[in-house]
Image (cartoon, rainbow, N blue to C red; front, side, top):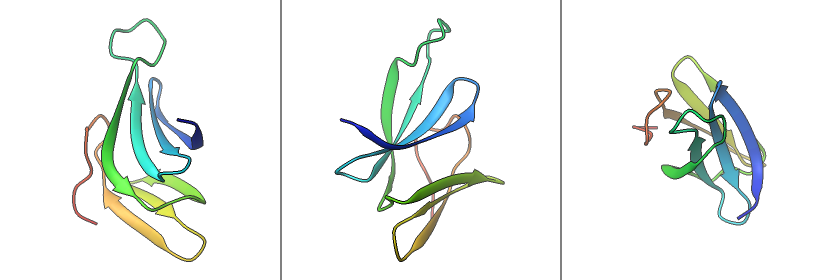
Length: 81
């Protein structure tokens, strides 16, 4: 699948909105070789225009709405909106 948006949140962790599904995936380097080798859904969906991480939350927007989920860096899922 092709990414729509990519947000770098740490040196080797990225959040990616997937084009077509608007699903957010966490992509990261699990073996320390400098190449991302794991991609997993974190349970956030709906965005297609913007994404940001700030103070423990990810913010994702569509053309009319902004959603917020609690997200701890390194976590494999989001918690409540």
